[in-house]
Length: 331
Image 1 (cartoon, rainbow, N blue to C red):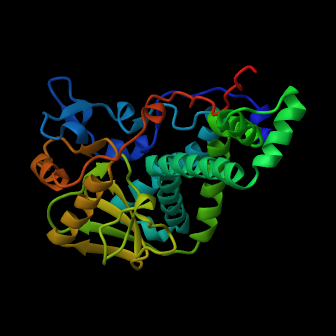
Image 2: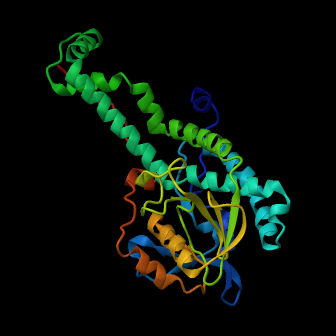
Image 3: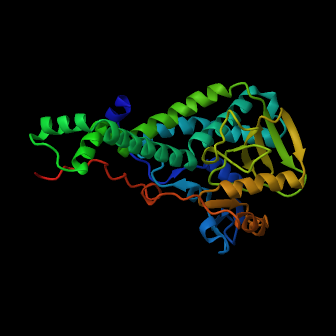
């Protein structure tokens, strides 16, 4: 964290949480100019007419990594550079002839697992819960020590709980500052990518093609699924160690699965619907479709009983959270 905090701190706005290489697979030529566009549905306005934009304009989250994001982009770029070749090999049937393609797809699955909106929400919620628990513990069990620290620093005894709470917060002010600046999340998201890819390094890859229909993709594309529950990821208590499979759509006619065997398989319409429903349910804001797929009605029906994830405005807008520290009232 100290190394990252001292290094270059350039920010890349509107960072992709869905690989542009994957989004390009869902693009089709549209209109007289034949521009390649992707259809998108906003979950908050699910019955509105789909919008169409190029892959570069889809799958973004403003200041997802809020500190030194330029340096973290190199981690993702290394995987994206290889991903197009792996997709081409899947299309021409040579994917399993070269082991590096399976490694690339595993890396893409892990990348989208750790570089995801739910991971950002879980990190933010975990920190805020821990911060509140820290303050509460000191206020309940360490009031005498807080009073002594207050007298030592300011020269007078505290007269309110607010002044005691200030001292409790001050004990972790350094950590709070790092959290507020996004340094901790920047470090952990890269560390998780490296750790998770090691854990899955030998997991077989299965490539699924639909016998009929096609896949869609949400802005939370890697999902941890279990057959016996509706959860789709960390906000539902599902992760690598307690899921049956990790899935990632690689295009309208291709999906990668970890935990479900090895090789090419063809899946029926019910399975396609199951995976598509999970994508819609897990999406934070947007669901992306191939123009002309006809999946708009399906996506709308899948989202009717599930509300979008509640993303705090401070995270959605990319603003740095206000510091927790407050100055004590003058005595």
